[in-house]
Length: 220
Image 1 (cartoon, rainbow, N blue to C red):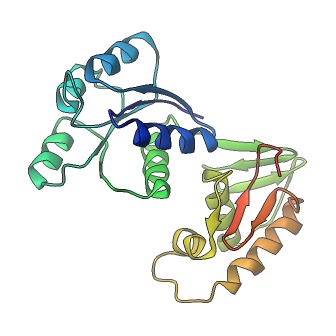
Image 2 (tube, rainbow, N blue to C red):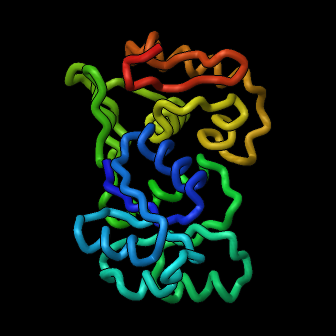
């Protein structure tokens, strides 16, 4: 997975982003001021920077100007006006996320930027499974597992958001698409199929009164 620098002065938000990014497998460093962000960026190799605009000491726009052009940046800010967004994108940022945001939205945008920059994971290995995220193929013990397009979309959603509890409605929204008008029961049916086909009866867990999660940490 990727190594990400989070530059955000609100510690609760910084910690929340770091905790969830780490849950899905990323490595994170945290900075709380503009100068600290630049210092850490100069001392380590990052795949992505999540950069608040309103940082003390040096604002996010100034920090972006001093970072290497090859280092992907996503601005994360409470500033909603179009001028700021255009300025951020004009500086070469990959994306601009406005607070408040859903954690799953953040994770999805991070994944999109990492893949676009060829810094995301090309495959996911777990037990005897190998999920080729680029080719959309799944191997179990070296043999390809035939999945329907919808089964694969659901599996990829669980993989990208692993260790996070996802409601049935959220799984429908992500894996089936915003326009899906079906019942949440279809999620349960597809989950059962994935468990059976992939041998993940224990790892694809039912989260009481919420939905499901793919647990890769070996904890109940």
